[in-house]
Image 1: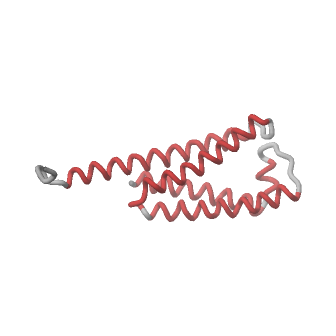
Image 2 (image 1 turned 90 degrees about the vertical axis):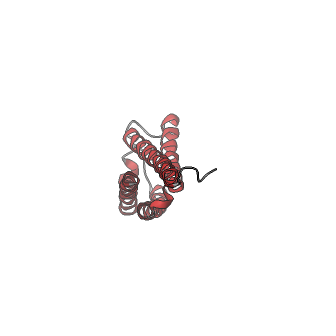
Image 3 (image 1 turned 135 degrees about the vertical axis):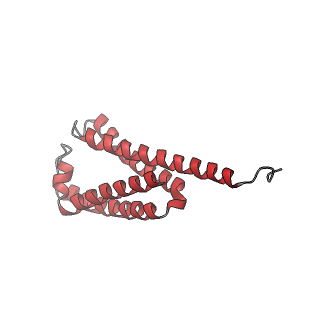
Length: 139
């Protein structure tokens, strides 16, 4: 359970950093992927920043709501995997360069860690419940 909380906090911090970078200087953030920017790109970047703020709040809240670790881990890991998938897709299209790989790797890592910790949390809760049932009580 401590692992899940820690990963949620790290995930929330990463999302908060992305929010800050996109809301304050979207051109620099988006340009770091080798993409040319203009006013429209900056506008969409600032709008996307708000989504990262929402994910950050969900991540921090999830760190405190340990009883719902498994479903929360599924939701948050899907978010990270989807962000990574868009990076891979844009790389294959030739729209972003090799600079996207550190971000893609981090997104896949966070998604995998969240999913793994959620699964481990569910398994440990199941085994803990099994340990609480007295022998012969289930017959």
